[in-house]
Length: 295
Image 1 (spheres, helix red, strand yellow):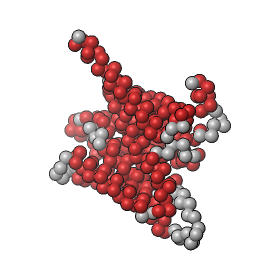
Image 2 (cartoon, rainbow, N blue to C red):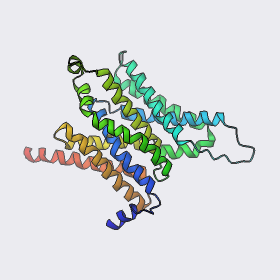
Image 3 (cartoon, helix red, strand yellow):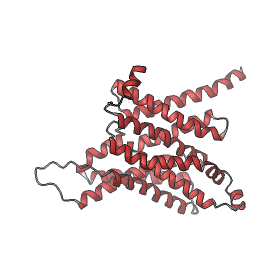
Image 4 (cartoon, rainbow, N blue to C red):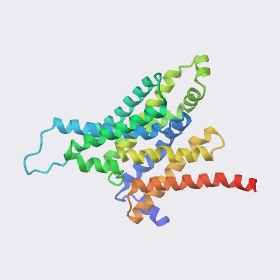
């Protein structure tokens, strides 16, 4: 195992950019997931990655329509511009959050709205991908969570989005928790609840857009919620959740990437599977004391 880690973190390791991008999203995504769990909006963590994926495919379709088609017999290698893809993914997530905030005052439950959004975004992503046949291979990699294809430019763009988002989530976590747990008291104290809620949702939208740009919607959902759920079960205090969640995310991402590299498995889904195993172990450990006391 030590030799494997030495190989992974060697300066000349071929997949070093993919590894560091995986560790980065493993650290930042669970922080956003903690706030989604706090607001009892876990299903939003399913819908928003799908919306971001639809934004990426929609941006690719528009770009393909604006460029000249390939000549007859010429192979078209569609290469999306990373900054545009990230902007489309993040913009779609933010637009969906604004729509949901507007619909919150209307009739219907939040879960129903999130479910409708997930279904429509998923269908739209598939249709837009089908309408852009030159990008079929590119978007197939996106939807399958192809982690090992990430390069230096992907890591740079993701770091520009995820690192500032992580700083905001950590620096203003008390305000976000206050606005989410007791917004009425916060308003009575003269604090701007709407501002803090908007800042939190906007930051979560940036995180989801960046992670979907990196690894697609499925891996994004797993990275958002599985480490966060495990952290909630382990933490005795709410504050400790924001320590355990990124720690579990990074360790799970490193183990998953290592197993995938050694056994030649798809890295993205292997990381999600490792997060799932960690969550099952945490749930089992939390149940065992209850069984002992009952006996």
